[in-house]
Image (cartoon, rainbow, N blue to C red; front, side, top):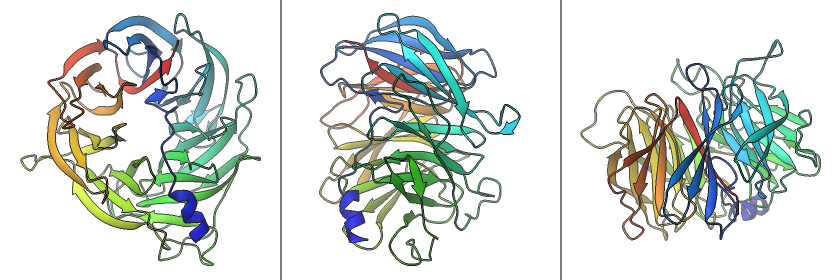
Length: 396
């Protein structure tokens, strides 16, 4: 297990999921906006984004596709992948995953193919470290799948499907079964991390990066496997409902966003048998009362600040990070000028944060004070119906 945890200590988030697709020195990006299409939206929309000035120019509908609620792109910015968050796919209880080629001049997307996600309502997608596989979290299906990416960008059929298992949380409405909500590969591509809202756990599967196969052992009371060798998970307080996860750049600390109670739980990886929970803190202002669910979490590229989004309070929560201890302090909440901020992304320069309000269909931008972490007064920069995911892809 200690050898396992040595790998965990070098974890960092992949930047090719909703957020930023690599090209460190690029000045020009396409900002893709994933949406739900049960209203006015038709699919994925695109904007040219100037990283120097923050200026945006609309490029229109990039691709028509059903419920592309989460997006990812390859490291070269040649292909984009989207979940199709549906409950039925060709008559089966499944959603879909669609592959596109990216026209780097126009931002338009050309569909290559679509395959089953092998679970209903896929809600998160990422690439493994080799760029040869997609990792998909199926929310209603309560499982995760691995989908091969062929050399030309087409998708193959799933090489692995794993059903999440463990003790359910106490929320009878939201935790009636497993609900995989996030999946990422570890830094050395040996494991896949899965945040399961229904189980109050961040599960850790073994990942065979040659075959694209996930495997696990039985969950024991202390979060490890029965034999202590092949399965590991971080356990959260009952009713937390873990949604998304992020890590400190050095992998020493893991930050888990609780959707159901709008909290951040901080875990330390100090080479012991389990991840050690060291802090749990609310993302809501003390004055807030009412219903709220949290949606997104991210650490600023400088590692000094952490942000989360609140749906109900309709705010971005600002935290300072003590980089020596990993603990965070809530320093403020800033309005999103809309309702239900489902996702946000920090721009490639680290100078701005963009938030997508699902219910009001608007995208707002905040300048970031990189000395204090505070977000300046937001302003609306775009209108996109049912906007739920933002992805920067470098085009120069």
